[in-house]
Length: 272
Image: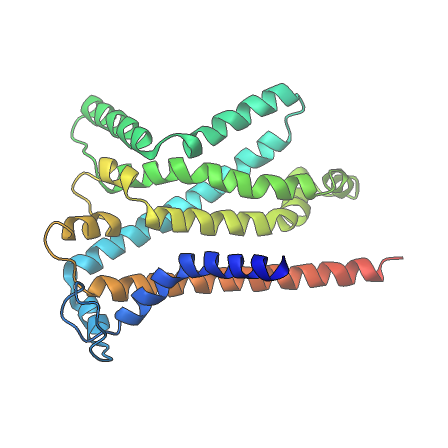
């Protein structure tokens, strides 16, 4: 039984990560086309060509700007929303609010994209002189990223001792200082996890971005437009760099959480 479970786990991980490893290997391929599946030689020229391609760099810049702004705003809004939801005492009201919060995650993306597009077009026509672009993309990404931050922060709030905040106020802290000194450090791992999740979801999004982008191109939209003609091997190099960057962020977060866990265990061990 143990052997079967190990084989099953190996096959699952192989199925998930083998395409990524193939992409990384072929990002160093010297071949001039992605349709050729033979590794013809090691080369870094696609990485050099990547940084020389003005269109890809422009799309990457737009994608990173949108992801950073959307992740930052969604993290603040999601954290505030999670604190508010955690403070609701009526379980029926809390359950109803959670369902409303989770709706953007279970709603089909194409429905969200079309509805946001109609909303932005209506607002633009009402105000006059506005059009779909960077602002509409940022607002759309904040909309679908915020619920993920809420789901990351809420478990940390529920794990925290509810009397810590009151104890800090009893010891002389005002509500604002008690929040930043007591509550925020306790829920920080959930905030960081939600921010990284929002960042990666924003970079990855295509459907909602496609409907709300107007003339602004993000990286997924640009890659989709390339499929109509010819997909350059530069995309392999770009995908490899993005994968390494996200992996680096995840390693940092996991190391930080492991360090905090060891510090908490040592602290509990010293307590009588």
